[in-house]
Image 1: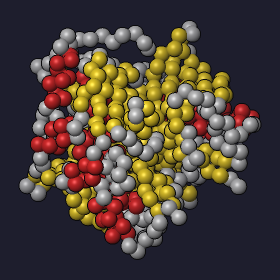
Image 2 (image 1 turned 45 degrees about the horizontal axis):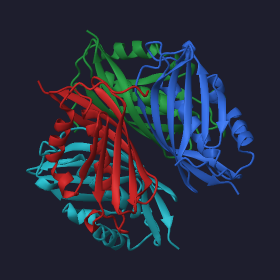
Image 3 (image 1 turned 60 degrees about the horizontal axis):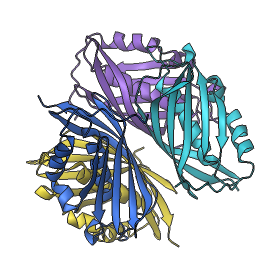
Image 4 (image 1 turned 45 degrees about the vertical axis):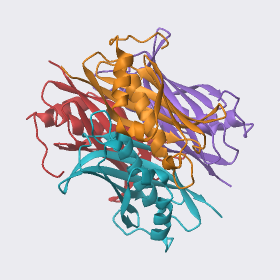
Length: 147
Length: 147
Length: 147
Length: 147
């Protein structure tokens, strides 16, 4: 389970960064890609009143958006060149209120596959450098060949 | 299954509208509450380049955000006064690309409960008045008494 | 959404019945296929102390097993000959205790696809002919070509 | 995240074993409770033609049944005396064919709670002592006080 992943796209990092830069929503949420590794991604969002639910905490929709993207690019980083990644589905549990200066989502591949890749994601609230788990995700992604 | 829901909060509509108005993210996504009924809510979002994924379609995060909120308020509309609603978890399937002039999310209660309410949600792309299903959700919500 | 499904395998009913007959678990659970239609299946299980959880009700595992199979064959009925169906994942909500003389699971295709098919399933407790919803499922299936 | 769990029921092991013994389905599946720890359970099932899907592999329903039970008792082990545990919902991904001499399910608590507990489960195929992940689960459980 802990053997390193097989990287099929030597330019995976640039491929991921280019795709991320095209996502209008990620800019609208001030999201940044803070880690790009084979099979693992981290995305962070600073607190803003624009990102809140009714009690002023981070909205579950923000947590879900960034952890879906982190899982998607974690899967994409292991796919061959000339492919696209699509989210088939995901499920998220919200385990504590998302109160923090920052929201940080980590996505990692549990099981890579030629067609289907399964990822696990976690979202943490960050306060003065301390991280607290606020949501966890299980997601299925599909690889679409583009040539 | 088709009997009308029991409404415990006579001011459910105002309660829902007031809570929705406090969600910074809903404003940031230009979302409007277009239907408020007992056990059923509809939320719409117009297209904007700010709401896109890498191909210029609506981002799954936008679809998920509004259908989660629609399910949450569908559940909340059936809860007693002096209560809050929290999302325990949800699962969403993305069944076709979210291409459209508008995204419309409908949430409805499948099973109301004293503590746990289960909702089903659908997201449609709207183009020239025609609706096409692009995502579907199954969600669990919890009622927290505030007094 | 209500247009009839496109049937690619004229022998879909025999294909489904033959595959069902090979499932050792379905026999071990006394399960019978009570409806075989394009995109829709029904499976029933009579009550037995062998199928219970700790309070003597039907076990969630029995409900899940038969509704997964109902969703799987609902999807399979729309797939071409020379293909196999596999469950990628499912999510089930348990909305009321599964008390009854019989458990009946219905699976139906929400969105057929060349590769991925999405199904929705419901499980009912049956008592003196009356049905009560006890679980609901959302599932993703994949079509594998065998030639 | 790694601090030991707070055990509220000093007799948790006996409580779990007594409840497990009452589950008719677990006996019908020849399932045994091979680990009972605070917040973590393991359940195993030997291969039998009675537990198969159409290709002779372990049925997804068997894998789901035992990992649901493992997650349920993992949650229950941290609940106070005079309480019951119920599964609200779960989601399972099937990541490889369940071929093996034995199926082994591990459930562990990710987030204990007064009302809601979230668990993560994994199912492994065991062949000549070697384990291979075949399914993974994310589940929400609720604590019901019985007095």
